[in-house]
Image (cartoon, rainbow, N blue to C red; front, side):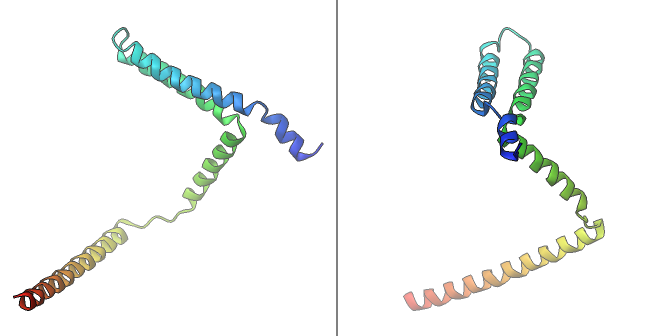
Length: 124
């Protein structure tokens, strides 16, 4: 059995699954606004959470949803590999960037004032 046939068998009816996801999301939004005065906010939030989790479950069982879930897992692995700077390194870098911004602002202010003065001399 080839790989493409296995993938096709696993992700049949993807269009229908996405329609179910859209119906769950839109139905939840409509029901939330329709029953805004009848039910407490807590109950509506709980129902929306359940609908959202079910919609996410259905979406992950599609081809695109499955690949997105794999991407999220890979991103989580990559975040674990990051070497984060220490507090001292962060503070030093922040101070250097702030100093460069202030110096650049002073230089640009000086250029603007000087060119404005020259333009006022020429214009009269």
